[in-house]
Length: 469
Ligand code: CS2
Image (cartoon, rainbow, N blue to C red; front, side, top):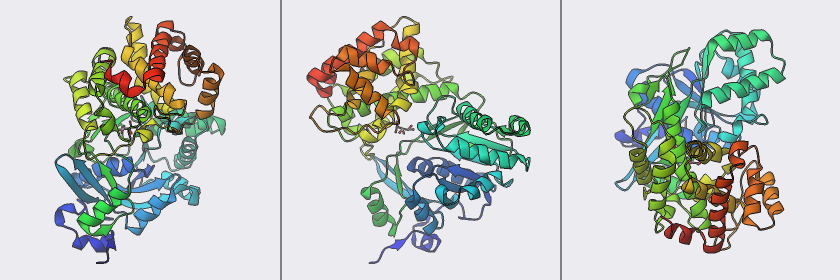
């Protein structure tokens, strides 16, 4: 039987419970999203669809792919539609999401995207562009600077919403855009207008969404009888906490389960340091031990106990979680989510861009522990695993790819150490873009990390973890 492509015409043949919750294309475009990756499709696109289903509003999305063209082409060939499959021990559930009106490929028409950012019908710009897109060399703040300059002429207010895993993500994005405007000699009127009319709310986002694989696409074809070139897999869990600053209005995301609040900080600290901190630690230890996925890594003897100690002894003491939430209970929930047998989240995917992730995920935990005189033993293991990972060889001698914007600097630092663990730690800690001076000069931390690094080199990650907790 020929399998048809997903699209408006195919919806009638799809079971009713798997169809979009809104009539696709009915809502006018009120949101521009930048970053058409798997995470966006399984997170913000789903929340916005649910919000429109509950309360309406012209909050259809034009989603922009900054680099990759195939996903934009697939979404357009499918009338904006794509599927999300929730996977868990209880089985799988696939459904079509209908909140995206169209996709655009940024390099094809940057001026068109600038015009879209200036369109007064658009009230919100959301972004999932990863940690490294906030630096001064990155293109996205420049694009936003151009868009806001054009928009200032219309005077229409806007919310620009970072959905990346960075602390104070809204403020960081604002600062990056303003730096770009300063370089371009922006008129004072533009800066004043941004001050009064453009909000950069902070957010904390959460859903485990691995990169799609052949299995993802095959599953959709098998269950719905259509092909979907933009299909994604996700865990059932999702969370979105947003600072409620939307000068041009917003979808009723709270009706979709989002938390709208004044202060996102306790949520983002809890999530970044617990979930993402443990995630990165598992990614480096697992990749060293030859594990392909996070779930496989977590099943190594002693691994769960080690992660529990990392959470309870190093992460939790320095956190002020949101009222009524316990960091240790949250950590248990995180470990259960990581064990989800349906989610094949690859260790090397999470290991990517460590230099951009370590500071907020692990180093802040170390700094907090040291501030009260504690010994961050388990967080030091995490740093040691990262250093050993960056050296490029797994415990079984397989090559490990260092996909990181600071790869050159890290590799040079390690080469200068000539194989000595203490020298390696000292050289890597000298990278000021990653390690703040106070932490880098803390000899107790250096010794802890060097000790773990030596043990990892001698015994391998699996044996070190088996014998440690
Ligand atoms: C992961 C995150 O890739 C990574 O670094 O830690 O993408 C993680 O899956 C999400 O933040 C979960 O919300």
